Image (cartoon, rainbow, N blue to C red; front, side, top):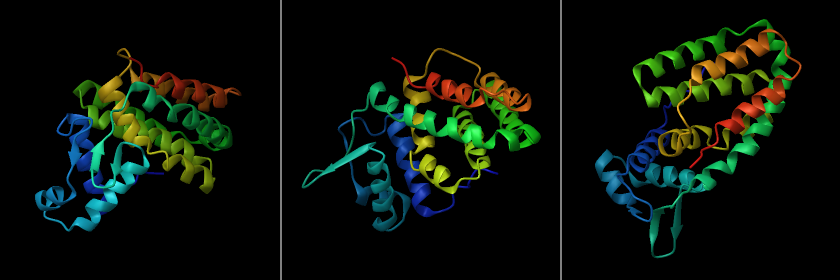
Length: 207
């Protein structure tokens, strides 16, 4: 299962706004003006509005009558809230996908290799992309559409980006962490679900 390609205009605009928030272009409490973004990107306001709604559903921004849309003042605790939920979902996914992934770890190995290259290059964006793709492969391999939809609805890529860029734990080799998960699938570790759950929880942001 390959990671989805960002192709819709809404998704591209969402990533543009997210990068602006992460980079500090828009500070906590600062207003994001829909019309200005539309003019800057030379698009209509409709896809900009859709992108903002998606980011609001993830509680990254907030809106109020007559006050417009503003960046939330997020803390590490805010970001941490999704991790126990995600960890539980991935524990179930690992247990459902254990047999399939024990037989074929090619897709997981591909993401680990790409993650290792990203670490060597110091490419933070690629680290996030391949980290999320690795976990999506596991959830997808579970073969449960409801599980996959629920997992994706958590906005994993958004929160992973913010966690690494804003509240990254002490330096660690993410590639090595993920390789250990691959090895556990290969040896049919009966505790693979608990192992993946523990891994996800360990990635939660810390101050």
